[in-house]
Amino acid sequence: MNDLDAPYHAHVYYEPATRERALQLHAALGSGTLPGVLMVGRMEDAPVGPHPLPQFEFHFHAATVPAVRALLQGAGLTALIHPLTDDDLADHTTLAEWIGTPLPLDPSVFDPPGQNQGFARFGKSEFA
Image 1: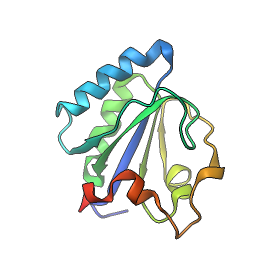
Image 2: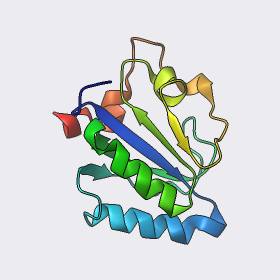
Image 3: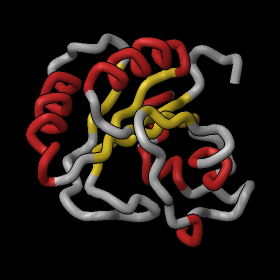
Protein backbone atom coordinates (compact mmCIF):
# COMPACT_ATOMS: atom_id res chain seq x y z
CA MET A 1 0.00 0.00 0.00
CA ASN A 2 2.65 2.50 -1.05
CA ASP A 3 0.35 4.36 -3.47
CA LEU A 4 -0.60 7.67 -1.83
CA ASP A 5 -3.78 7.73 -3.93
CA ALA A 6 -4.88 4.26 -2.75
CA PRO A 7 -8.44 4.24 -1.40
CA TYR A 8 -8.96 4.06 2.36
CA HIS A 9 -11.79 4.56 4.73
CA ALA A 10 -12.49 4.64 8.41
CA HIS A 11 -15.40 3.44 10.52
CA VAL A 12 -16.13 5.55 13.60
CA TYR A 13 -18.12 3.65 16.24
CA TYR A 14 -20.37 5.09 18.90
CA GLU A 15 -22.88 4.12 21.55
CA PRO A 16 -25.72 6.19 23.03
CA ALA A 17 -23.34 7.79 25.55
CA THR A 18 -20.87 8.84 22.83
CA ARG A 19 -23.30 9.61 19.98
CA GLU A 20 -23.07 13.38 20.48
CA ARG A 21 -19.27 13.25 20.23
CA ALA A 22 -19.56 11.13 17.07
CA LEU A 23 -22.12 13.56 15.65
CA GLN A 24 -19.73 16.47 16.23
CA LEU A 25 -16.90 14.59 14.50
CA HIS A 26 -19.24 13.65 11.64
CA ALA A 27 -20.22 17.32 11.17
CA ALA A 28 -16.61 18.48 11.35
CA LEU A 29 -15.50 15.94 8.74
CA GLY A 30 -18.39 16.96 6.48
CA SER A 31 -17.45 20.63 6.78
CA GLY A 32 -13.92 20.11 5.53
CA THR A 33 -12.06 20.15 8.88
CA LEU A 34 -9.73 17.47 7.56
CA PRO A 35 -8.42 18.16 4.05
CA GLY A 36 -8.39 15.06 1.88
CA VAL A 37 -11.67 13.59 3.09
CA LEU A 38 -13.62 12.62 -0.02
CA MET A 39 -16.95 11.53 1.45
CA VAL A 40 -18.61 11.20 4.84
CA GLY A 41 -21.30 8.53 5.13
CA ARG A 42 -24.48 8.79 7.15
CA MET A 43 -24.71 7.96 10.83
CA GLU A 44 -25.88 4.35 11.12
CA ASP A 45 -27.64 4.17 14.48
CA ALA A 46 -27.75 0.37 14.51
CA PRO A 47 -25.18 -2.32 13.78
CA VAL A 48 -24.81 -2.93 10.05
CA GLY A 49 -22.80 -5.49 8.07
CA PRO A 50 -19.83 -6.75 10.07
CA HIS A 51 -19.98 -3.83 12.50
CA PRO A 52 -21.29 -4.62 16.01
CA LEU A 53 -22.08 -1.02 17.00
CA PRO A 54 -23.60 2.04 15.36
CA GLN A 55 -21.01 3.74 13.16
CA PHE A 56 -20.33 6.06 10.26
CA GLU A 57 -17.61 5.80 7.67
CA PHE A 58 -15.61 8.29 5.68
CA HIS A 59 -13.39 7.92 2.62
CA PHE A 60 -9.93 9.31 1.95
CA HIS A 61 -6.66 8.50 0.17
CA ALA A 62 -3.64 6.77 1.72
CA ALA A 63 -1.80 10.11 1.86
CA THR A 64 -4.34 11.28 4.45
CA VAL A 65 -3.89 8.31 6.83
CA PRO A 66 -1.52 10.11 9.27
CA ALA A 67 -3.91 13.06 9.64
CA VAL A 68 -6.92 10.73 9.98
CA ARG A 69 -5.08 8.72 12.64
CA ALA A 70 -4.27 11.87 14.64
CA LEU A 71 -7.82 13.21 14.38
CA LEU A 72 -9.36 9.91 15.49
CA GLN A 73 -6.92 9.48 18.37
CA GLY A 74 -7.98 12.91 19.63
CA ALA A 75 -11.70 12.19 19.25
CA GLY A 76 -11.79 9.59 22.00
CA LEU A 77 -13.95 7.19 19.97
CA THR A 78 -13.22 3.70 18.72
CA ALA A 79 -12.40 3.65 15.02
CA LEU A 80 -11.15 1.26 12.37
CA ILE A 81 -8.95 2.54 9.53
CA HIS A 82 -8.36 0.29 6.54
CA PRO A 83 -7.51 0.22 2.84
CA LEU A 84 -9.95 -0.87 0.16
CA THR A 85 -8.40 -3.78 -1.72
CA ASP A 86 -9.85 -6.85 -3.41
CA ASP A 87 -9.80 -8.71 -0.06
CA ASP A 88 -12.65 -7.48 2.13
CA LEU A 89 -11.70 -9.74 5.06
CA ALA A 90 -8.05 -8.66 5.07
CA ASP A 91 -9.09 -5.01 4.73
CA HIS A 92 -11.01 -5.26 8.01
CA THR A 93 -8.52 -7.50 9.85
CA THR A 94 -4.85 -7.92 8.93
CA LEU A 95 -4.62 -4.66 6.94
CA ALA A 96 -6.67 -2.65 9.44
CA GLU A 97 -5.62 -0.39 12.28
CA TRP A 98 -7.75 0.15 15.38
CA ILE A 99 -7.91 3.42 17.25
CA GLY A 100 -9.25 2.73 20.73
CA THR A 101 -10.54 -0.64 21.86
CA PRO A 102 -10.85 -3.17 19.00
CA LEU A 103 -14.34 -4.58 18.44
CA PRO A 104 -15.28 -8.08 17.29
CA LEU A 105 -16.45 -7.90 13.67
CA ASP A 106 -18.72 -10.48 12.02
CA PRO A 107 -16.48 -12.03 9.32
CA SER A 108 -19.36 -14.03 7.80
CA VAL A 109 -20.55 -11.03 5.77
CA PHE A 110 -17.25 -10.30 4.00
CA ASP A 111 -16.84 -11.05 0.31
CA PRO A 112 -14.46 -13.87 -0.63
CA PRO A 113 -10.90 -12.73 -1.43
CA GLY A 114 -10.61 -11.53 -5.01
CA GLN A 115 -14.36 -11.05 -5.30
CA ASN A 116 -14.75 -7.84 -3.33
CA GLN A 117 -18.02 -6.22 -4.16
CA GLY A 118 -17.17 -3.53 -1.63
CA PHE A 119 -15.99 -0.97 -4.15
CA ALA A 120 -19.53 -0.46 -5.40
CA ARG A 121 -20.84 -0.33 -1.83
CA PHE A 122 -18.17 2.08 -0.72
CA GLY A 123 -18.08 4.39 -3.71
CA LYS A 124 -15.09 3.48 -5.88
CA SER A 125 -15.95 6.54 -7.99
CA GLU A 126 -14.85 8.63 -5.00
CA PHE A 127 -11.29 7.50 -5.75
CA ALA A 128 -11.23 7.76 -9.54
